[in-house]
Length: 288
Image (cartoon, rainbow, N blue to C red; front, side, top):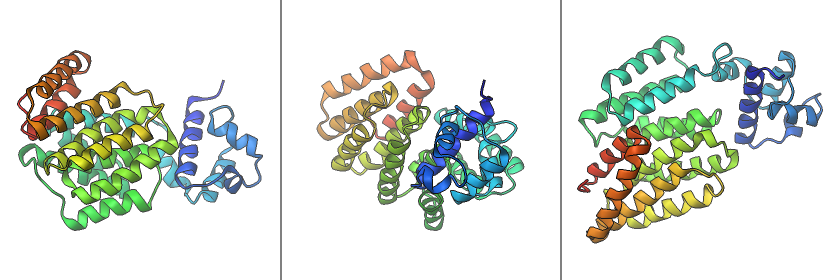
């Protein structure tokens, strides 16, 4: 039986290769292509030496890779991301502050950690200043990281999702398209919660400006990129955003009733996401 950690290595390596637009033949070195393919699918193990050789061919150091997968505890960073996202939904300042301290103590100042600290601090600030925007230099730094240093898509999308409310509308549109293209290329279903969350946050950015066209195009693009993703959460979010856009455009009571009906349904399914939806709808001054 293949060790779970080895399967994890294969999954993350596959993702890095796809993100960097590399074929198996370009990275396999002395290994058979079938061996690399089986490794990526969690069907075979390879030696550490062969893994390092694959990583070098993909333009990544072993240290960087093992930092990503968390060699001894592969789910630690993912648990931290889940904790941050939940704390953000709940506007839980102490939990967000604790996450910042954990990042500072355990990540040795790596570039991804610095970006993470920045976006979590942004979430803390938005609790009291909802319209908070990152400085132009910080926005550029986030954009450069997300577009020029593709590594682990889940971490990248998480950073984007957290940064959305404090980025300019133009930058959000550019990064959103980049993130969605990458999501479509990877098709990893455990990212769909992040995609659904970012849809809601992006809606606030554009609907505040009464930019109906960009909002509708965003929903259309999401459906195009996510065809086959089978995510109830994303479908729900897209429908809710469209209803909010229609209501804000027409101020029609039927749209408001439909919004409240969807909220009532989701309140029983996931109270944390329900509270997050209440927050962004109220930011748009939808009376819910």
